Image 1 (cartoon, rainbow, N blue to C red):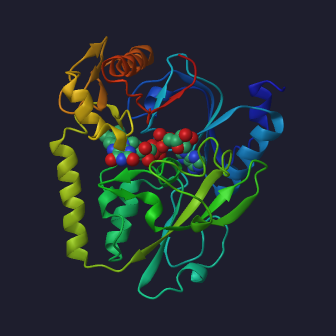
Image 2: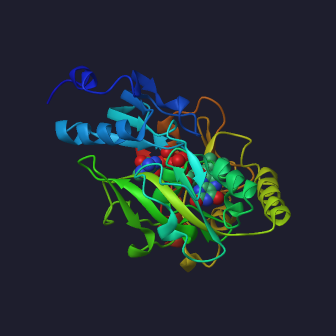
Length: 326
Ligand SMILES: Cc1cc2nc3c(=O)[nH]c(=O)nc-3n(C[C@H](O)[C@H](O)[C@H](O)COP(=O)(O)OP(=O)(O)OC[C@H]3O[C@@H](n4cnc5c(N)ncnc54)[C@H](O)[C@@H]3O)c2cc1C
């Protein structure tokens, strides 16, 4: 295999920003994580697709970074390439697909629905705000959730009983060889925090380039009120007081209660390893009190899993993804 330095020469530097040994703590909401060997920020969709194709062609391991709101990166960082989608942030209503240039008419046939198209790096807040500007409903519940369109679709993010996949009509995806093609969301199975892009799914190894959401028209004032209420609720629950990745574990109907309450009842709020702590306000959110290491956070997460298993027999399912070397 070529060295990463040699590999970097193949990347189109006019259409990508590149950095070696980029600290991932700058790019994760935990503010934790060691360096990525090679960090690439594609500025165009063509460069994004080409970077993925090249990584696969040269056998270079790669990871896609959205807003870094659901990952814990190890202190020793990530070997290989991290491709940050932040600059792929075009958004439009009822126009052509920013990735494939296909017209939107195919998915807007249904009356009173409008197609909102966003490239993968668009932040969820921006997506919801753009929907509001056009008087489109369906995304207000997601307002305040950190993350990008691509990350939300990959995770099938869920807020206030709504999955992001609910209004997803089509997506442009990048196949491992760098080809861009369009898919219909309804051709795939989506379930609680599961998407076809995750391990074991039929689109695993593909990247999300852009997404089209088919949204009903709504009353602007009501949409704005819902957004305001959701943001206020998150603030009241101290979501933004300390760096975190949101809920660490998924809910599970078998528990008969939200995972946060289960952890709460076991007295885990405030539990601490180093500067990694279970939030004093919400036991399913773990926070970085300042300078926490990935090792401490991981130990806190894994020891919580053990503790819950020993006390209740339940196996917690992790929502936060571990990445890189710890
Ligand atoms: C304060 C706070 C509150 C939160 N509240 C919620 C909540 O209410 N509900 C909820 O579901 N989550 C919540 N989260 C978690 C997080 O916001 C979501 O999981 C979000 O969808 C992650 O998006 P991201 O862009 O940050 O993804 P990242 O963390 O960057 O990546 C997550 C995964 O998506 C993959 N990915 C990213 N972009 C692409 C792409 N273009 N193509 C293919 N794969 C890609 C990555 O490779 C990775 O595997 C919260 C997090 C925080 C910090």
